[in-house]
Image: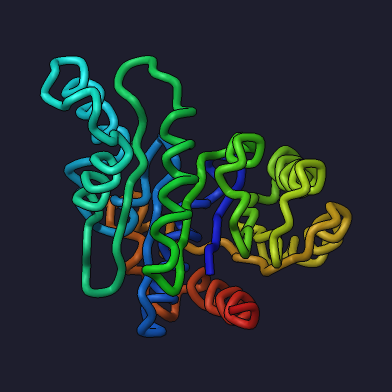
Length: 252
């Protein structure tokens, strides 16, 4: 199962991704986490140091080709595929692959193209793939998430956040990207606003996957720079995300 976590920047997308990876890892299944956001934060949330990204690998291959270290007749994708597999960080609970970005002002499109190819070739090696997507709508228009089974659209309670979530659902329909399930996740919700926000969520046309209430423990971890994957099981956010994971597993 391929699960993508999407949404506007700053809504808690990476927090949801890291908690999701943590909860799924407890099922004993093989899990690959992919950080597909150029503004990479997932490694820190997972408490992992990453030495090389897919963007780094691509730049190295370009330089080796230009300098003549790689014969022009060589199959570049085979070499790239091998080097990408070398950049996968393995842990006892899950593996992590960080897409990164090209050096300088290079277009991110090439890395997105590689992401599509990676998902096609590597998906059979894992039970679950969790993708922390780039913020906004670009991953849909570039079709990097077209093979996703479950899309989680994370938003804060703001008008703009909910509007972006609605646009993600509408754009998916326009592009005929047929997820098995698309859930809206409302994050940082005040308890007293729960009923009103449920009504707003229904108005988007997206199925509400769950409400994640304001959690002082998450704020504390963010302030101290502690990995979010270490959030305790009794934290408000983790309890709510556990319910969301149960919904997702029904489609596996």
